[in-house]
Length: 334
Image 1 (cartoon, rainbow, N blue to C red):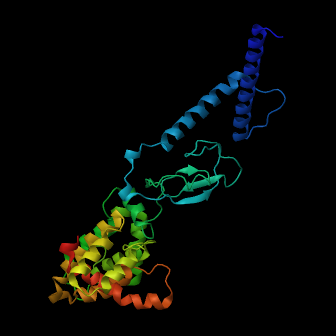
Image 2 (image 1 turned 30 degrees about the horizontal axis):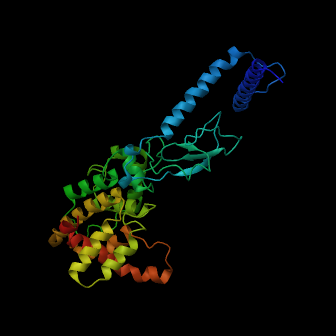
Image 3 (image 1 turned 30 degrees about the vertical axis):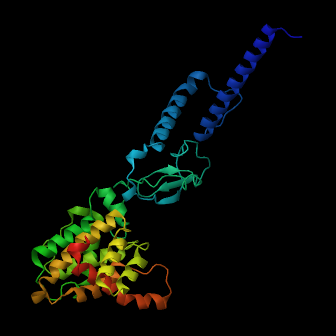
């Protein structure tokens, strides 16, 4: 029977062998990640040490990022990641599970808004805590409203703020405001200006004398949103609220519907309705009352989510009524 001493020696030898195998495996992984071909004569330990330190620093950084404190997240204004299949150059580790991302092409997915890199299978496990970075935001128009707000760290999209300020400074008494279309080429020029220069875009009277161009640019921005200001989730509740006859029940139903909107959408709608209320207060000059504005902004602020053509057509009159109610009751609803 083997002695206790020989048993301990064998155990220690096995441990050393397993450790050597693990280190060799780590070296093989690093070599593969760096695209190196290993011959029978492997580099010395001094060669591997800086690479191991680099890999360790990267992994600890990724783990730290992937394990943010729950208190750092804001559920009310949470934003899902905009993941797209991506081909990474050089070695990359998943920022969720901290494991190596294998493959030569399409190794994983990358968030187009914040740059987060994860395995495709990990993307469904990542919390909805996307923090958009302006380096990844390529345009303003057609950009998700919440993404733009978070990227610029504002309450509302700067397009809405800037256009409304300009309209209120010189256009509230303009006849047919929002009903009369501005020259389409000029509206497109304003759009391209915002996409290129963001908040530095010049929309002053010196650049665009016709206020209808600025009004058209604002309407175009709202129409181009991938998710309307009145989101698809809240859409049915707003339509049902508009159908109610009892004034008290209608207002209560509108309050419940407004509570379903994402924070950035709610802030934008609140600011816009306050502006449209001021437009109606100048009806004597601009000839635009709440009903007229409802016709213009109904289809602009809300779109039927995946409904058949007949239902969507029937909803048009209720879309108008939704905006009309929001304008007339702006002070009590927001």
